[in-house]
Each structure stands twice: as structure tokens, then as C-alpha cells.
Length: 288
Length: 349
Image (cartoon, rainbow over all chains, first blue to last red; front, side):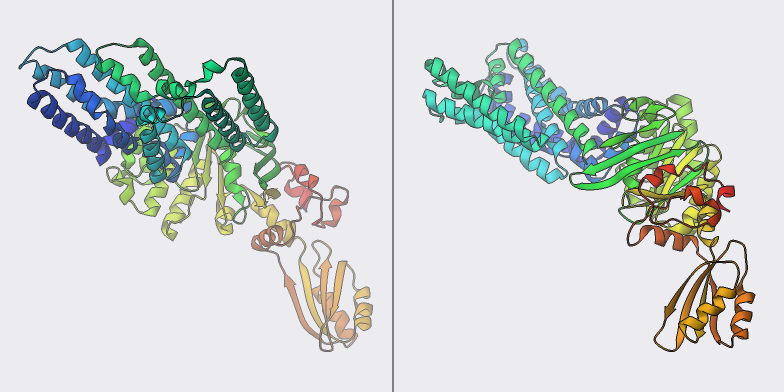
């Protein structure tokens, strides 16, 4: 794991990627800090972070696209498979490498509240709490990006799919308000999700019976539930979309609340996607 | 010792390796030989633990590759078909990474890297980017990577591909040197290479092991039966009469050609030279012998015979040792009976 981490960091900073990522983030932090804090006469650094959270949509694919797709293309994954390191060690090593790249510009951004404190009173707790949450948000998106990189062989495909996923996550809350709020719409949407899940299951496991059973039991269960408690379903889907929006969770911190449940939420997403990445690597070993 | 038991690997409907079983002894050099798509790389990938099996298992010193991968992988150095190099690193950095991944550290790590760089001849390239190295040097870095950690078993998939003739000879010498205290499995589709380096050859074709023996024995297996080709002027019946008088003929095939000549193929008994007898007999019968030649099978023809057209796994006809006849229509089960040790020279002659 340590060897993988060391190699990853070396590779990010020997190529342009690591520097580009840091520069990209810092340029935006700098511009927004000037506009909000210096010209706008406010001492709230967290507002800057809130305003620039959109840059993750572009920044995350930049560094996550190559992390596993490139290994596969260059066939270096064969080396990783043949070395006496287990797959979770490799995946965690690579992920920590990504986190280091993410942390570098964050550390530099951490100077801003100190600089601003020269000109006014800063609420350090909310500024640094937000910075921490900003980092967690990035870490969470990177774990998703890494998983996407593990299922493709081409960096470009990984970048595009990650970008689309990031766009969707970013606009999730906005999209949620367009979802019809009545109960039947929620039911249909959830049933659709169940069917999609069953299809994915079929693609992965090639087992018709389990897939159909999943779809039938899932949809049947949902319908019975719906028939039993209709009011529960009204607006359910829109609320679900809102509550799983990763970007939305970050705004709680900006408003000055250190939301532990959000921290747990981010960490859970990270764990789930790291686990999926390990599984995706393991699957490749079996039917390459 | 590596034991491969009933190994099968399927990709969807395509069977890459089918029910392969063999044993690999310590301290010998083994060569996998076969045309493209014969399953060489797949088998090596599986032994190295890079690929899962559909059926069967691989045991290294009694430990299963799939169940105790960490333990087994420490004993294996593997160079895949395409050297798995990080092109943005220098050979030194790359070897440091692999050494650390193989849990080497400190002085031991550097000492081993220095030694292996010397062995593989990449010491003077240590600080160039791998991206900028020639194919030959990339291959050497790949081999160096496999040697790190002093593994007992070294698996090299086509180690000399892309090298110039001088480099090929160097790498072969290197493999022979390493073979003195390592078990080496290498693959190639170049016959002379395998013949020159290996103690034992396994010929693979369409995912099956079709032959497994020392290069000498494989050649003998076929050259033991020297075939005589004759072209005689005359008719079928006369020639048959003459041939009936000659002793030591195992079997023969007669084929009429377009003109008034007959082509005859004779398999004489082992270790007999019947050319003089044939000549005298035909001379006495006043049948002009237009051509008389001995055809000896080379390893190349063994290889071609085993891997082209219909695949007939050769097995040894157990009841009929003295006849030296090669059974080419043996059943698949015959493969399993081939054990390299039991298949010694004495049995063959």
C-alpha cells in the first residue's frame, strides 16, 4: 500500500496533472476570495468555498480519470495483480494518493482565513469547518471518480462519464424540484430504479432468474407499500433526491453548522465506492 | 514444485485453456511452445495469480494460488507478454517501487536492485525515463522486475520478443544462468529458442497440452522413426512383391503416381538401416529405383504436426512400447498420462 501511494504521488507531481489540479483550484479560490472577501467586504471565507464547489465537476475528472483506467491500458495492472499486495491495499494506496493531491491546494487555501484576519474578525471554526467539509466533499467525489475509472479502459471515457456523473450530482437538488410531487410519480420512479437495478444485476451476474426475481419482488413490494400508505409516497422521490445530493450536504457547513451526520454520510459513500472499486478490480481478474 | 490440476479457463463461450494438467519440478527450465492463441499466456497468467480459473487449481509447493495468493505471489516473479512498465518512471524508480511492493527495504533493497541491474544490463540506463528506452531495454527492465525479491519461480512470457539477435543471445544466457538456481517457465513461439534454453518443452495447442518432454526426446520420438521415401518405376504388384522380401519393415504405404512410377513410404524397424537391402532387392528385380531418401523429423516438424490441422494429442501407447509407434489419435485422457519423469529416455527407445 505504501509503495503504491508513493508511486501515485510521484506520478501526479512528476506529470502536469497534480500541478494543474492545484493551480486550477487555487486560481478559483483566489478569484472568488478577491470578489467576495476583498471587494465584497465580508470576512466569511466559507462563502468562497460554497461558490466554487462547482469546480469539482471539472477538477475531479482531471485527476481521477487516469487512476485505474491508465493501469489497464498500459497493462501495468498485470504487475499489480502479480505483486504480493492485496487488491484493497492497491485501491486504498491509490485513493490516498488522490487525497494527497486534493489536500495540497486545500492546505494553501487554509492560509486565506489567516490573511483575512488581518483585515477583520474571522470566525475560524466555521471557516475551517467548511474547508474540512469542502475537502470531504472532494474526497467523496474522487471515490466515485475512481470507481468510474476502474470500470473503463480509456481515460477519456472515464473523464466523460465522471463529468456527467458530477453534473448530475451537482444539479440533483435543482432537478428534484422538477420531479412531480404526487405519490404515484414517486412509485413509478422507484419502480423504474428497481428495474434498472435488476438490469445492472443481470449485466454483472448474467443470472436471469435472480434479476427477474429482484425486479418482481422489488416492484411488488413497492406497490404493496404504496397501496398501504399512500401519503408516505407523496414527494418521496424528490426528497430522496434532495437528501442524497452530495453537494447539498456541504452547504450545511457553510451555514456554520458542523453536521456530523454529513461527515458520516460522506465517509459512507467513500467506503462504498472504494469497496465497489476493489470488486471491479477483482472482477476483472476473473473475466479479463 | 508447481502442480497444475485440470486447469480450465473459459471466456464466455471461448475456451482458452481446457483441462490442462502437468507438474513442474524445481530447478529446471520449462518452455511453453505453441502457436498464437494456444493458451500459453493464459496459463502463465493463472500460475502467476493474475487471472482466476474457471475450473481446476494451481498449487505451488502445495499452496493454492487462489486461496493463499499472498504467500504464493512472494515466490513468483512474473513478466507478462507486454512488460508492465510505468513509462513515467526511470528504471531505478520503477524497480524501487516493485521492490517495496515485494516488501524489500533499506540496504537489502538497494543491494538487490544494483545486482539485478547489473545482471540484466540496465545499470547505465537507470536514470532515463522508461518511456524513452528502446524495446530491448524495456524488456530487460521487465525481466529485472520479475527477478526482484529473489523468487523461486520465474515466469517469463515471451522474454525475447522485440530484441535484436545479440540481445536475444544475452537474454538466453541470462535465463540459463538463472535456471541454475531457479525454476523458470518461459513461453515462446520460436522453436530454436525453446530448444536452446529449456530442459523440458511443453507443446500447447488450442488450450491443450499436446506434448511434454525434453527437447531431445521430443525429437527422438519422431526421428526414432526414420521414414524412407522411394520412387520406383514399375507397377504396384511387382513392387509389393519385392518389398515383401525385405526384412525389418514396420509398415509401408504405396501410392501410384500419374506416370508409370510408384511412390513408396517405408517405416523400418527401430535402429535398422534397410537402404542397402532395398536397393539390392529392387536391382535384382530390375525395377529402377528413381529416388531413395531418408526423411528425419526435426523438432520443427514435431511442432507443426502437433499444432496444425486436427489436434491429436499424442499419448504413448502403453501396451505397445516396443513398436515405437506414435499414437496420434489418442484420446484426451492420454495427456494426463504424460508425466515428464516417467517419460524418460529409456521408454522411448
